[in-house]
Length: 278
Image (cartoon, rainbow, N blue to C red; front, side, top):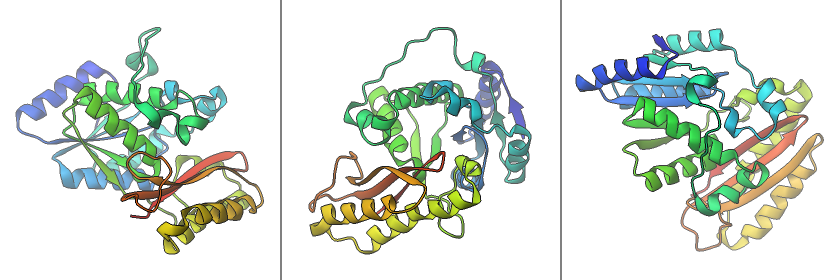
């Protein structure tokens, strides 16, 4: 695996590969890689010829400086994992390589920006679109892969691609879960053993809503889900929403694409999860 820290060096190397006809696939990450990330790399290998992974803890998408400070950065371990699954290129730049001084960025992504995660983390999706746009400009991938766990992020990036007419296809890959159902996340390392058990209420509730879904009883299902999660010790619910899968506005009985999404503080760790109902 080749490791690049400078944009210009990576661009020059990829240009040579593209000139030879290679299809470039790209998996952007913030590191602290787990099996979910690695499954994206494996899928990227199926879809293209050269897999590029970026590891960059992007400061502009953190609302809380403390959250940025404690975000795990086990780079040597991450490199070993990427090599083990056959990643071709790692881009691991410094902040100064990606941002120059007081940059201004605003992209009008509409209602998506203020819903769910956007409501609880103002400015988050501006930071996400800013860095993903920068990374797309460097890598110029044919296909970029993102995990379903960050469902709203995938919608936001698709919106950005439409608005800016970017020549990249987005592939959303299923959530990777632990054997007990917990969605894999780099944040899970912060969970105490007790937190870890309490966190299971999120996936259990999503599965329950999915199994008992009735388009005539969406409000009732939502209320029952909120009650189940709120009753779990050590879990503070941020939101539970049964939403339109394309807009994330509340679903109704006529909505064609439906996703249930949840966010909660489990102990001191914020977790998100979702399930696609239809």
